[in-house]
Length: 359
Image (cartoon, rainbow, N blue to C red):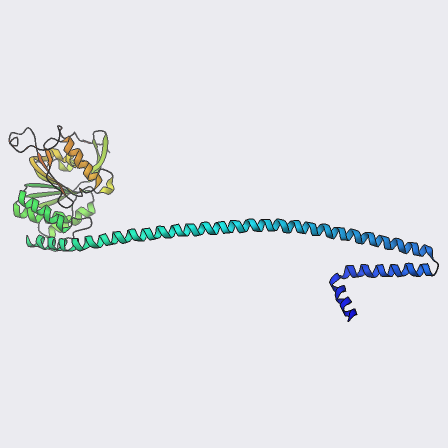
């Protein structure tokens, strides 16, 4: 039992330690034997070896102690690194948690905004659908189309705006209508002008779109009443600014325009894209004319109208907007036939000169 325990302890000490103990035991035994047999020189040699072995053992122990101290320093440094890492991880997790809460709140706010917009859109749609259906029915009560009508809405005028526009044309019975931007409204205007005895000239900068409108006019048998002219966008100088607008050359044969519908160029052309309409086409207006400005609920269009009213004599705004339309009246000042007309709004000023910039 005791030998077994000793053997277990020996295995725990390791082979090098066990060997050192064995050598030491042999040296001690040798010294003892030499002393007993009267060999002092041998005993001294063995004692010297034993002393050397003891010194080597002490050195080894010191080395082990130094190694243990180094290990302790490494362990201490490792603990410091682990503590710092733990603090950084905890801090990062906390920041992530706070960021997640912020994102969650932002997401909830965004969902609430979308919900409000959706609710408002649903309410508007509930009101708009019956209104547009009623306007569509009234539009087709005015005449019977000779071919399928082009669709309305989106970029084209919606039924409500079309109904108001056609009522205005039917009540004022213009002789010459100039439309800036062709499309669905061109066909509807053609039918109304066929009834009241007027003529329509529509400009379009897009040849493909102009051809589609011409095809629609032919299908409806309205080519004697309405025409579409290709009018590429060209640089037009007004004062100190240059605009991209319809080529003024396509207007040279027009005179006495008593109804101007401003529905182009599109906003994608650039800022204030429709401002040149009155400065350029104004010289082609009759002494009395009606001007309908579509999309007048947009900022650029509102700014253009205000500049027109401030800078053109004889121009006044008629009441409230009709849908997306602003309706303006123009009475040319200085003409005896129109001097008895009601005073028009606007400050002193004339239509500014127009210069077509060379390409």
